[in-house]
Image 1: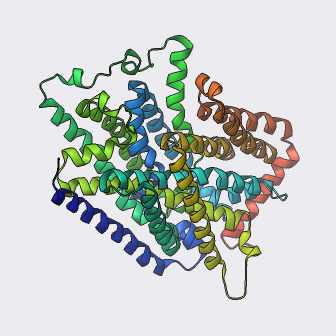
Image 2: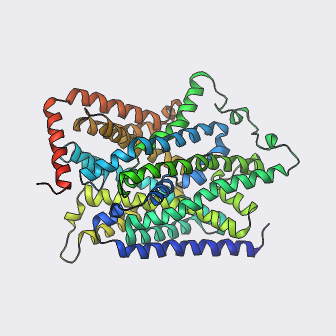
Image 3: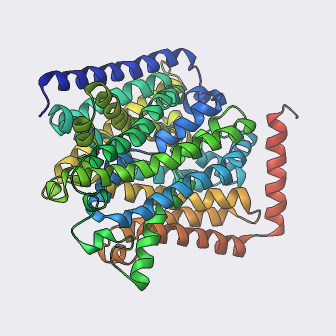
Length: 504
């Protein structure tokens, strides 16, 4: 047992951290005077800020709480998720980042839906509307998972009721997001990314050294009671083993279509800066993702498998930190856990705001004499934040897991936008109809497959929805591609590119 002074120190460190990110939001407000500043930080982010911001936003409550918890609940079969995520992060940076930065500036686009609409000359507005609705639906679940995770952390460490913890996190995130937009989000993400990687690297290393001092061997301590959990294929063979591997690796597919990550590529200062940023992101991902998995395994060895029977295994990280580390270090690392949730929630809140204000053009609907476009965008941010907060409160009461909520939202967004973005950047025969069909397929298959326990036992919705959406974009584009459309797309792109350089 730790004394009161230990917990007091953790509380002080945590409160100082919260005050720091609010200060960043206040300072960032001075540099925000337009929609471009608010939504894309004026396209002036440097490589280090961009890379750390993308990584902090990409790895949410599920990485520091959900993945360690899954390692304890599922066992070594969760290693496939680690492999898939790491490959997905690196592939997204190397395949998408440079082309997306170049293309979105060429088409003068502030959002992914806006880019897809302009690139494919969608005068009907269907791409924009469908995309905005997909973002609104799935991000509501995603943001609520971050608020939900904050409640768990604060309850575990400080004994605060989860509902109060959710409320505190929601208030802070909404405040600094409306003050500084993406600029505030990106700079707080830099701080949060440093804290997160510190947590993911330091905690499992300290834990392993602690386990080496035990009387039992390390191999015995890190062994589960059941054969299934000790197997990387969960004790299965044949198609079952393949399903386990593909299901875990399918997490990596989602990185190609997460709007809150793609806007980082769009906001970086120049295409040349991406060359440096992608290596920074890769070097963050490799130890970071494997470290989260090891936190769960080390917690298993330290506390024992029986300790988690009847308990929430998703609290393994904060329990391990406060048990093994000095108070001030534990306070920093636990702040890093909350940072993971906040950095994702603020980014998703910002993207949801852009979807409503820019893509559904709600700004024009609510425009008044006394308000401007930027003010209305901030009002929309507050409304969406409150809606996500209400959803998080419901999730806490209903007992949903962070892992499950994030998996559903990750699949919906990744499979809807991933195939559309990849093919729009790399395949010249992609058509407007193909993009619309892919967006609908990814979201609808996720909803149907994700709601069926039987189908999820065969293979996860993260894989089926992405693969089917990818195939649908290609097939529909093949049937709808014409020479006339080819010339139309080329001419439109030339006109917009020329306009961006001031050529009439």
